Length: 65
Image (cartoon, rainbow, N blue to C red; front, side):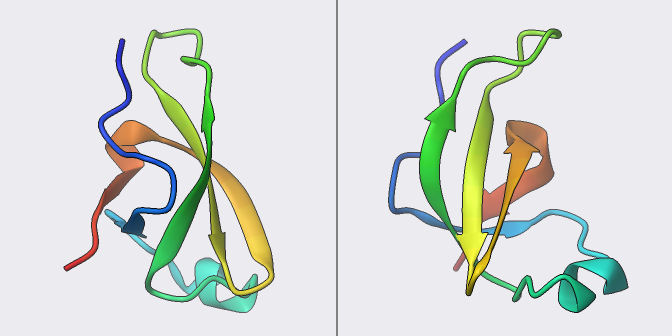
């Protein structure tokens, strides 16, 4: 499957949680790496917000306005 988002794009989590804020994640993150598809075939990404970074599936993020 092809990646919908590109490096450097600003995205937000489709469903954020209070844990995100405690871990240092702000409302908007930046795509820092395109990762291989996960075992289900869904594209994955590394996103960064501030000093925090995490892996997410494409269905977990939306383009930030």
